[in-house]
Length: 253
Image (cartoon, rainbow, N blue to C red; front, top):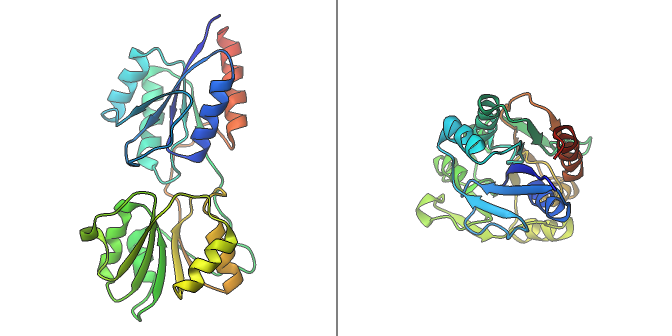
């Protein structure tokens, strides 16, 4: 039986969900690729690779050299550079590309959100007066908040962060979601948090903090998503699998 060779660019819960579906569905030879930023990625039921490709040409060479017949961009919503590389490389290698993207969070009438463009703007938006800040951003993005050392930061990260990279007064929690709203509320109350700073990652795994902020009447500084290429897009692993199955049928795989 012919199989369809698939490369999934991962690092998200959606990528992991798609990997499980591909492992359980005959007719696919799939590889899940991690960028390597997460030190201990979750074990997957399909083959995995870790590390970059060497830019657009490197990814295009990989697609051609490994006979990849379909590329799925299931990277994090803030991994915009990788999404642009995927679109360019897929065009060069003439490989069909699908983006598996979760929808963004949307503020409700009871939410107090301030949208900002980037981490520097988020740090500025906290203000001059000392505040207790719950910071849930990537480990490489914490540096922007060292410019505002007057605040007390509670920082949550999947991976450890070097002490030299942290603001002077910071408490670090290493944890991986999902996080329930009740537990998030207890955490915010325990640390006397005044404001939350987060990225608009979307999804359910880390949305509990937003429900907790709503209940406690806390403001949220929300870093908006960067622009990504306008490619064919679906939400949810099941929809991505349907697309791959349709592509396999068209190719007679």
